[in-house]
Image 1: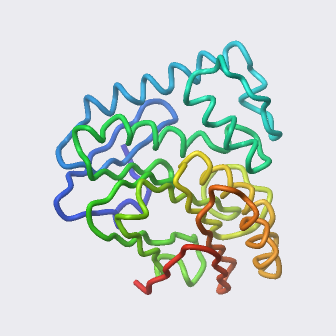
Image 2: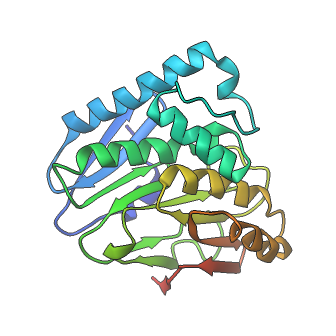
Length: 239
């Protein structure tokens, strides 16, 4: 299985990397030991609930609008619904972050320090500081700037949307729209909404001002070409 090129930059001293891929879900996990079996179970559990909900509500998969609350939905689906409502986007905008967090939380009893990366969306629970590189495609700033993350900030979701990189839907043209939040599903949905607001570098500031109005969001970074803007609890570090 071919890995995304940015994954060659992911490492952590003392943690064992392993990959879990089930249908569209493709995770790179760093844990204190190889927990492939437990991670596979966690992914299957998350996907089973989501796939069952979509089978009954097929429009859930395609809508770009927030989905109404559903207290009878599986926990993962409820997390996606809440995140989409908070950011004003469809629930599937939160799927990668929601799955990353669900798997990370399931594995934490066996590995208190854990990192789960799902298509550029990351759930972290750290015991020591770390730096998360910002990948922004062909931007000259790509992999030149990182986010310094302290253990006290975690558990933390760091999610990135792009209008120029990858296959995920974005209505904007940001090379990277990155959001930090304690809820990884919210970080994912908010990153999509943030990226949708950025068509040119002139949109960076108003887009970040909008992001600052979202409860639960800790910070954000937007990269367009050689321009960068940041807001909130963000510590940038040159790489």
